[in-house]
Image 1 (cartoon, rainbow, N blue to C red):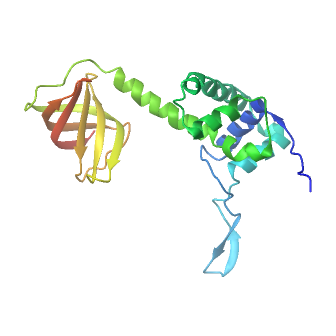
Image 2 (image 1 turned 180 degrees about the vertical axis):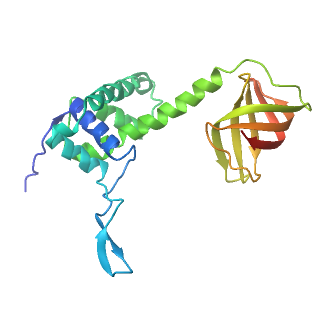
Length: 227
């Protein structure tokens, strides 16, 4: 039996529909639909599910079939999204891009897409948001002053903003990257009671452990207070 041909859509229009789906789902990527009803044990009936939502890939098709769902901002974001992936061409040529990103690049920079592409296509805004946030942190850290906060063994007190948190399963602690009020970069391991939050400011007391070649001051015995 011959395969049924699928409709083709302009890639840039499909990307706009993808941005619409991302917006409608509140910036979330949903791989599957969230059911419209849930079982209520108290009444023993199906009741409306307040978390009901369509999977992003299904919203993409819905938006393409009803382009009124696509806003001007969605169209603008589609251009930004496509430009981002077009900018990966040098990584493609140098073979430094992974298979998954290569598939996304091929999809985003082609002329047309079909419904079978919507699963991956619908993920592109989420991937872009993750990479943009990561690059923002890298840019922030690279913009720090090329100075250390103090000398090894010095005891310091400083205010800092947390810009990156990485948990180590092996060491059972969080590695906190921060930028001080005078724009210097610090890093420390922490396993205490304080729950550090991204973009939040803290006042800390600590001891300088060592310096890194990249102008990072490593701290120890950190005692934080949220500002």
